[in-house]
Image (cartoon, rainbow, N blue to C red; front, side, top):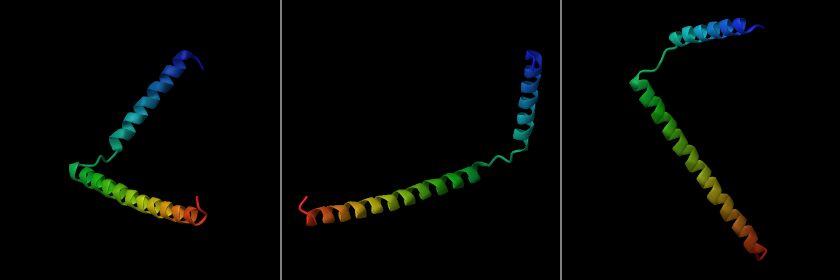
Length: 70
């Protein structure tokens, strides 16, 4: 493939990308705010669950290690 053909192919690709971006339904401020709030709440919830699992497993391991005198 010659250099000119590559340049034309790149130009066509960029034009097609631009056309596809024009078709995207971008969220408005309220949708973006709500989606961000959902993500933040979900992250906090999952972090809490992981923290509880960490504390429970640490407690269990310390109990087992205490039985064997370690």
